[in-house]
Image (spheres, rainbow, N blue to C red):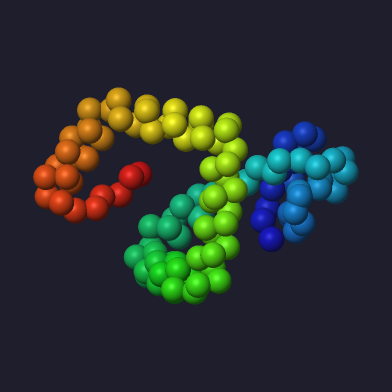
Length: 118
């Protein structure tokens, strides 16, 4: 359960449902995570033990054929959407305009290794 602030009425509540329905104004609302909680999440993400645990869980999930099929189907569905294709194309085009990114990719090709696209 996440602590949230309603984007409409700005009142906090514990979000427990999806979609997020604010109990104060009874409207479906995009919830905003409270900054204190966000800071705690960021701090946890810096913990090497926590990161290792998440990494192991992700690697284990990818070993499951059912999980891979589910993710693959979702991505195929996304890429059928022309708006998504245009959005991703714009992101890639912008990324390649960054000289630092270009240098990183060039160096990776020279070394023949895969790199992170973040």
